[in-house]
Image (cartoon, rainbow, N blue to C red; front, side):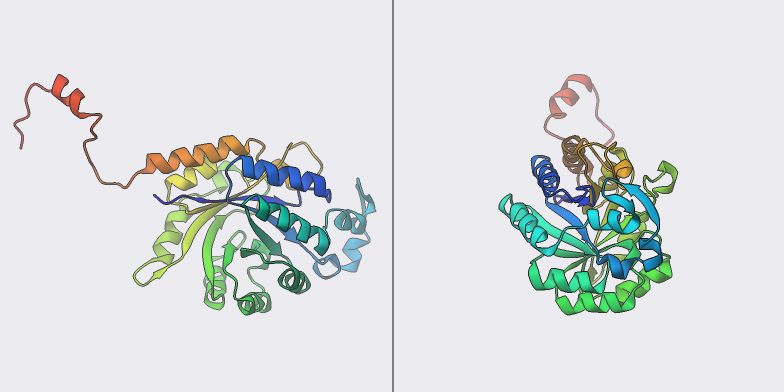
Length: 281
């Protein structure tokens, strides 16, 4: 089995603190992840003026605007984080949540992939704008119907991975539906076409990601955190024990095997010792 491409989703768990973001990048590297991913928003585009003006207590102030501004990095900070990640040998990925952010990322960074967040999957203009970048794309399908998924994939040109996903934070075990990975593989792999299939995790345990690999996930994305009790809406759906998770993923890669029955060399002396008769063939 090929090595699973593992993405540590830092997202907004950095809480606007570049030093914390670097600590999370370090943690991803120490855990043997392949990539880190961040999110970028122009808050005046993504949110309405009415919503931004609503009262909201946070470490950054008393309004939603102050809270949203507080957890956003500017493009110079993203450049610093991209360089920091690349120097550690990690791919750098960003989910843009609006057209302005996509322009900023394209003009100032060199991301490995663009990630289509589940919330952006039904924005035709945004998907077409992604095509103009020529960059490979990773797609999450949380909140989407089969019809919406098919329509998005018909628009996008350079899809590298499609990730099964449920967009609740944290996801209930009974709503993870890992078998949808099998459905996606049947739909997207075979014949002359091949699109990677994976899993984007919002469950706060390790089992869903590991189970996804047993079902053939070629890419696994999970939210990474230093401490799930920290401030932030994504923290409860994040993983603290990233090293244990990635170790378990790597072990599962070995366990899955190739599906062909064989007698291993380690079994042969046991057969010689325990079998007295073999006259069935």
